[in-house]
Each structure stands twice: as structure tokens, then as C-alpha cells.
Length: 177
Image 1: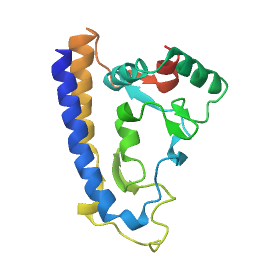
Image 2: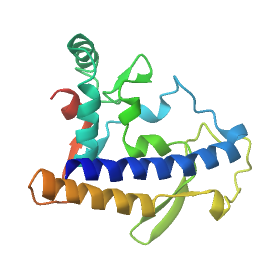
Image 3: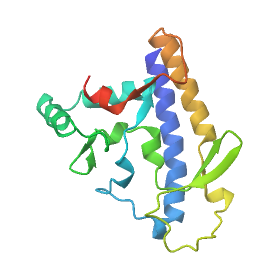
């Protein structure tokens, strides 16, 4: 069962990657995000159980000494992502979906409010009243719906627990095992 869920999760990541690639190409001159930029990592994130599992698998590929150094570095740091080491993500191949999309114009729907957000380091050459075209906005609704379904399947069928949308794990908890 876990293999099928992971296969579907990888397919979700692939579909998201294709959309992000298209947007990154279209907005190339407006994006300053690049390796070493960790502006969006100045927050402690939480992830769903399935993403936590994938991150744990990635962490298991790192040496115990490296994990120990990263833990020590972030021991008293609650302001930055605990997966950062020298401005680089130690779990980059397994980073959560939210981290894969940051910087791009993303459509958010919260309650009855709809808005577009993006990294303020990007799009600085556009006028303040610029309106993004719908086809060039990342609408996360479909991706998040699929992610939640996969997480529900993982929680109920693999972990054998009752699923709840509030069942999230902090990245610091994952790092500290």
C-alpha cells in the first residue's frame, strides 16, 4: 500500500513541477530565487504525515554526524527552517510542496477571501497595480486537494490512524526524531 501512495505522491510532485517550470520560464526575468536564497525559509513549517514520512526517508540518507551538526545549529533557532544548513536545504529532493512553489504567484482561497501572493523579492519591476493573468498563476487548490487525499490514505491505511487536517508535524520534530 505504501508503494502505491508514494507512487501517486511522486506523480503529484511531477505534475506540480511541470506547472512550476512553465511559470518559472514565463517569469524568468522577475524571479530572483536561486540556490542559496533562503528568504522563504525564515519560518518553522509543519507538514502532513505523508510529507513527514518522505522527509524522514531523506534524512535517513544523511550521516548521523551531519544530522547532529544540523540539530545543534538549530537548537535555539525557532526563526528559520530547521532543515537549512549554510543557506541550503538538506532535504531538497524531499522538500514539502509548499517549499517547491514559494516565490511564484500563487492563488490562495481562505474562507471567502481569494488573493495572490508571491515572494516580495520577486516581481519588483512590475507596477504595483499589476494584475497577473489567470493562466500564469499557480492555483494550488487541485494540488492541495490531491495531497490531502494521499495524506488521508497514508494516515488511515498505513499508519492505521484516524485522519485529521490538524494532524501536522513540525520540521523540527522530524529533524529531532
